[in-house]
Image (tube, rainbow, N blue to C red; front, side, top):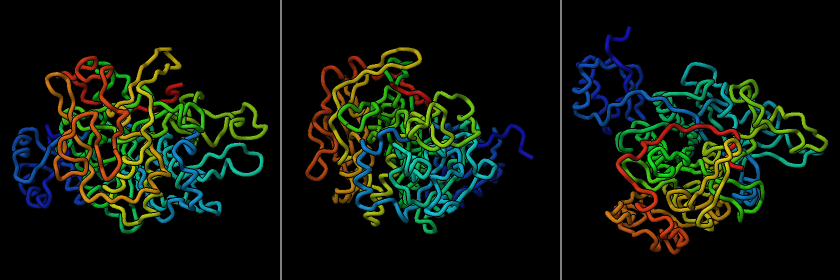
Length: 515
């Protein structure tokens, strides 16, 4: 029985201090619920009167409530990201383990092998009580973007094949979200901990985390951020959705400062969402107005790191789930991909929008890179993706909400599109090696609103780079000169960075998205 006046609390420990500190916590009345050694974190019930003493205990890094996380598709994404060129090189992600930490994965035909019934989901674990099956509909859609093989849209009579860029990866289904797309820090941390433990068994090299939540502490103390950092240091690339709050102008910042945790961690690859405008050409692609923008609250880390297609993407449908049953708006008519399909709605595929859909595009790209170059470190993977990202966006673009009719203006600056647009072919062709950590840099804001990127000399991006100068890694720019901080985007003039910055809000799922 839980103690009176005690709360379920997450305690993160300094490396190597967990065992000794645990003894001190138990003397203070803390009771163990779960402990995750791989990420130096535990979940405890701590009496309220002892909470301050626990915070001061030697070896304790942070003490936080067990917070709620939420869930944050392939319409021309294959063409715009350059995935078809990877397929021409016979790169399919074969042998690479990809952990999908989400709402579970449905038994979909597009996630089987060459023989029907041969599932490519190699491992299932449910961290919220259940059998790992997707009751919400989000995780299956994400898994399809990464690894769908198009079995249900392939062959005679089909006009379009819906498949992921890495159809031969080993999927690991780590369920942390319930039928409403809700979960907790503890479940996500437990899943990350398990992925680290299983890394040598399934060759887990990348984790997709299309979930997020608000944060009120620095990434240095946030338990989700500490967990993803531990995975990164264990050799696993962490790909995280940026969040869907780019339209949030609650604090007069026009959506800036709305990146969600753990996308605020400088270690991870944080992904924003673009709109392909339903064409195979990249020239008309634009950032979505809902994609969350940096710099991050509190630490002012430059985010997102790059962007990828995430608007109205078609991927796998999980039947009889909450999303499936909530509306028909995102259902796909058979006529979209089948000759003579008519207007009846497909029972195999549907559309979703959000940075949740953009992140798995990058996850698939990472799997392809690691298949081609198995010895790559997470830092080299991140640096290559950012360096080779396309940097040909216009200065700004507009979009109209299909429901409200409201028009939004988006600026394609570093806090909106990061280093640029995912280019899988270019990333696969790059052979540069990162010999320093590729942590996303922070910015400082001067009294006149001028922004400067500041990183330590022990980091890949340099020591002190003023906005708009040539930021160089190797021989080419990570952030191009077209991202110059101009008068129309002057930070501190039209977009004042005040003390009332939003502390980020939970990652929400969009059905329609931009049009």
